[in-house]
Amino acid sequence: MIQRILVPLDGSVTSEAILPQVVRLAARKESEVILVRAEHPIVTENYALIAEAAMDGAREYLTGIQERLRPHRIRTRTLEEMGAPAEVILRAAREERVSMIALATHGRTGLSRLILGSVAERVLRLSPVPVLVLRPFSSYEIAKTGRPEDEPLRKILVPVDGSELQRAVVPHASALAQVFGARIVLLHVRAPVMDQDRTAAEDEEIGKARHALRETAIEFSAAGVACLTLLEEGEAASRILGIARDHDVDLIAMATHDRRGIARWVSRSTTERVLQGARVPLLVVSAEGASRVQASRSRRQPSRR
Image (cartoon, rainbow, N blue to C red; front, side):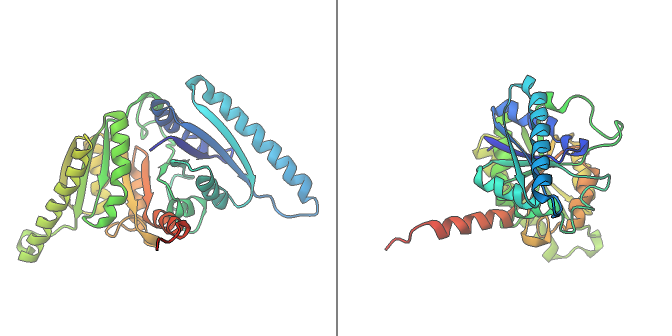
């Protein structure tokens, strides 16, 4: 799953916060890391000179990051391109056939700047591969202690909603769990219902949720991955964060659903709240991006007659 990781960097300390997580994954799997920086200078009379200087600066910066990663004995390459950052990242992901994109969000408000059509939001929505996303912490009191690159993945939280969409995240979470010998915590969150308001239909829905959890757990078990199933009631983001905290998980893996955000029961605002409050990275799998890749492959395949 993680043979090749694409790491977009923009020269900021914030963007570099993802590097320890990249080391954590790449060192265990001996993955190749591709460091990419996109430059998009304003078109002016001296555009050619400015573009050349920008490319030189990007190359020098990425070479410096390579040197920082050298002690970890990780294979790295650099890629500097001129163009809109999101398009450069997505094109590089396709052309380099990467297994994962890893990036850090900007600002204390998690995805609030990213949701409205920005670079990271576009990458999260259209990426053909899973995206490992991290909100850097401004306070050591919030961040988990220790060096992330030295810590194994022990528990992975996988929130699912009982739909076929969950299939998109299962193989990726399973692959990571196998690499690290991690345990899966499988979670389904229902909207809260008072006991006196519970109906036979809702009891049936609970039964279906439990069945879906068991079926998904069987998939993990078939891959040799231990799995704990949890059925909770409450507000989705709060329960996801609560379970992540109570079970001391190291990663949250979620699937996105077309252009409306994370799953059919989780809105973009939920995604933002999870990222804002999570002390661990999120692995986001885009159903939209995956479907685009599948459609493209289908068009390229010759018809059989």
